[in-house]
Image (tube, rainbow over all chains, first blue to last red; front, top):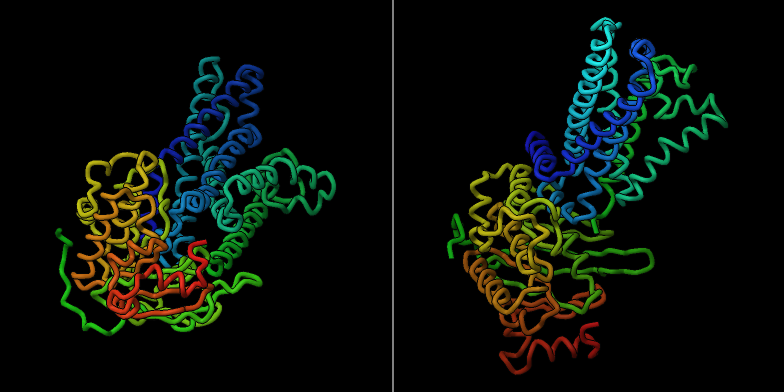
Length: 246
Length: 251
């Protein structure tokens, strides 16, 4: 198992895909922050930092990028044909799925830490420059970071499973993003009580975002999200074991 | 040519690859229909048939990539997926394009070496064997078709396996490449390996194979040594092939 995991980490390191996505996530988070800094007063910003909602923009950006990273873990291999040598080297395909899930989740942790650290640093420096103390205790921040990191890791794992089940890269990415940003929003309007339990809403609830999931508490939200992750991996495991590699 | 470690000669005649009644259906189409054959160590076995005869599907069943609907395939007595150290038992090249275009050839092999717990030094060794050392650190998308075939063969040789399974390895090779491939496969067989090569280039098969299996529509039409099948030179493999496949030839 360690060997397969090492192989997956080598895959991540030896193309620019992961580095490009990480740069994209940091750049987009920077852009979002720039937007906040230029539209909110330091007082508003300090207040926003207190509420978890102040971080939702950055967290959503992280989730977006780690999901794409996860999806590409398998769909890149299908697209370029390297899935054949991968499965020849490791015919026990569940090991490949497990290694891809673990490697992508680990990369997601790096994405989340990097993006949040840069974001927090920028806000802290900005507030300090305007004479505001960062109005949040460090353990509150650490708790928020921990939740965001855990959600990002789960989200990347779900991405890997989506890629395994859908296989076609563009279809998987477009479908996942459409679900994340469009379908769940529509369902939230139509059937709010059901939609509150869907993955993106559960992630929002777990983060403690005010934006729209009053039905689910943070702890329950995290449990629901773990449930979705387990379900996705189970489906991917069933599919990857049985499906022919043609 | 240096092939790395040498194996004790295997008992000639005990087959390395055994297919028994392999069958695969895709919806209403039976792509492979009760196919049985063997390939023995120390020989190059040509696996020939028109396009669509079921060659690629059969090779994929041998390697556990495609699940047969019926029948079985074993390599040194076990299904490929049950082998403890699969790429050190059988190496395969199935498609010309089987690597990320933005990863270097060397890194592609290092990724596979990690998964199979093979030393990185072996990566440089196989690159040397296939003559790819100079291009090894370039991104794979810059490789010519011939270089891609060589990189594929390098991946197949990574575990120094005793069985090689190659799907149309001569496709895209220039005359130098074809001669190199023929000599390489002959050397590997001389080294005691069982080499199974699918092809529709019959003159090429006739020049490198000891044994030949002719299939069409998923069934074996004829198998035996090349000398037997061609009556010791009475007829050519091409004539035999065209006769057996109703003169349809390569579709």
